[in-house]
Structures are given as C-alpha cells and as structure tokens.
Image 1 (cartoon, one colour):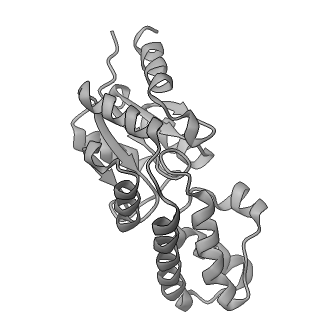
Image 2 (cartoon, helix red, strand yellow):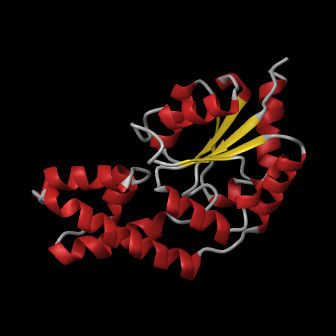
Amino acid sequence: MKKIKAILFDMDGVLIDAKDWHYEALNDALRLFGIEISRYDHLNTFDGLPTKVKLEMLSKRYYLPKELHSFINTVKQTNTADQIQQKCHPMFNHEYALSKLHYYGYKIAVCSNSVRKTIEMMMEKAELKEYLDLIVSNEDVTKAKPDPEMYLTAIHKFGLKPEECLVVEDNPNGIQAGLASGAYVLEVATVYDVNYENIMTKIKEIEND
C-alpha cells in the first residue's frame, strides 16, 4: 500500500493569493524604464517564474540592459514587501489544513520560486510558519521551476521517495516541476481549493489506487 508522508506546497496562488502582488510590484519597478508587462503576458508567460528569469526574458524582448537587472530586482523586492505588509493575512482554511496535517505527522514544505525573505515574510503574516518543516526558495536551487530541482531538493531533505510526497500546485510551471520530480500532484485553481478536505481526498485516492 502506498503511503504519503509529506505535502509540498507551492506558495503564490496556493497558500497566498499573491499573484497580482508580484505583477504589480515588478511593473512598478519596470515603469521607471518605460516597460510594462501586460496582464495577458503575466498570466500566460511570466506567472510562476522567478524575477531574475522574467528580467532575462524582458531583456530579449525590450533590449532592457542587463546592468539594470539588479536595481530593478531590488526595487521589485521592496515593492513586494510593501504589498505583503498591506495585504497578506491569515486564511482559516489554510491554517486549519496545515495544523491538521502537522498534527497527524505529515512533513510540510513550501517550495516557491520566490526569494527566501519573501517566503518567510508571507508565511509569518499568514500565520503558517509554525507548521512548516522546510522552506525551499529559488536561492536554494540552481534551476527554478519548471525544473523539478526544487521539489527533488525537498524530497531529499526529508529523506523520502518521490512517491511518498504530494505536491500542491496551481500553474503549469509548478505542475510540470511536480510531475517531473516523480511526486504525486494535486492541481488547484485558486487558494480556496487548498483545504484539508481536498488534500485528504487526494491522499486517500493515491493510497487506495
């Protein structure tokens, strides 16, 4: 019988409804140089990618000098921190889900293409940090999602096999990374789909298959 021992969560769009925060924070920084990402491109091309990857793509499209990347990234991170302080708050369904999973002995990780400082700030504001056993940020890997390295890193640190882990993801890059890691994947459409009932239903489905 298969046994799930760990739940590996993406963050933006899964535990935190923050997709627009990153979009707005980066655009505010880009507008200093007359560049703006359209909402269409945000949703269809850039969603879920690390800022440094987005800037590399923008340099090819708009001939944005690479010498500006560090400055733009710094402004973007400052803007993101402001958004977190203003908008990030606890959600009962997430607190309940993670507290129950923690209580029943599941290992819990957040694996996000964000920088560690942003992840920790969001987890603290959302009052979820106390339930986490591990955080894997884009600073902890060589290749961010859609590469599976982030999930494989978490699985290795837990000392588990991929088939003992469930990844919770919402966007194509993350879903691709989760599947490529060999773990099971629960695909969600919104942060409201991330609840204890849906997670346990998926786990029972896996274990009884």
